[in-house]
Image 1: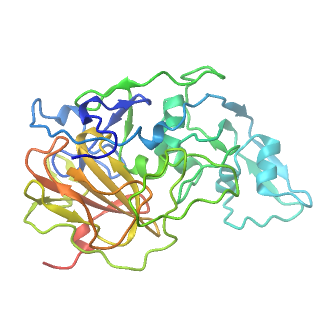
Image 2: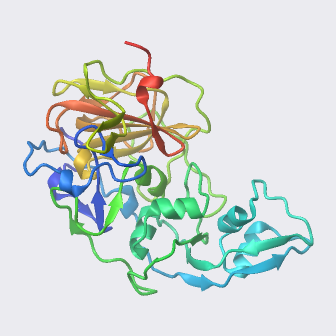
Image 3: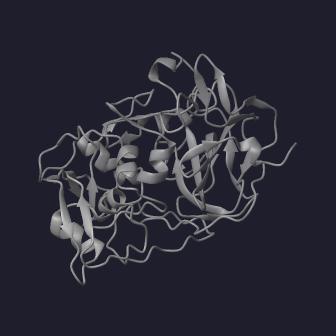
Length: 364
């Protein structure tokens, strides 16, 4: 299992104070966008594999200075030559939040005399390299709430200078001009603080901010790691079909699994070391073992809002930013994370929400 810099999974340091939630078994949660299982559901002792880790997680690429400013809600009358971005800069509100408040859609055509509601609230100005997860940590709020408030969409790449509206209750966890606390070691359960990161957060909140208009490097088929400070270009659309990542009996199906819990994907029985494959063409948006309960985890973005997830890997053979083809081996299944037996946890998500993989996979 020679991969990355061979840091042991149990000693991964996570800058943001996070609960890295996963699945026990089958990615169980009460809601699709919530953590996959509460800490109370974590068994006291489970056999653990050592999965070698990557470099620091992409969401650790930069500490965040909490520079949020409060904006008073008002009405703005559009002048000739105004742009939505310019109006945002002059009012202190984010252009995405203004568009959402006024029901505007790209390309955001404005007309002189048009009245725009400027939504009041607390806004954070994005700096170079900041990621959504790190921003959420700095203010002790859920990244998914920031995504919804600002109507953010794929590929979720933030711009330097972009103003993000923060949800009510956003706290200044660190003073302006100061950075977030230093990294703290992850515990066995992944709980080292108050906040929660799930698969959706990794997909939407791990891209580092870049200057507006900057080109995003195209994905390459070769296994060449992409620096945490560089965003990953995802496909524009998906027109293919999904195939089974691994053959084996199902352990857990999608949907209710009893006791009020819902599985966000399926668990497929595997033998340790059994290869699993990409379910469709795409780009690897995450490959690592920092999401503790999943152990080895790979996320592949397919475009059009589609993402596939592969958890409990014993070995990972791809890197973030790598282009992959349907059927290409991504790694080996195992019993990493809090899996109670060798298996592959597999999810499909469309526009951030888990869907039943069996509806999109060929019938066995």
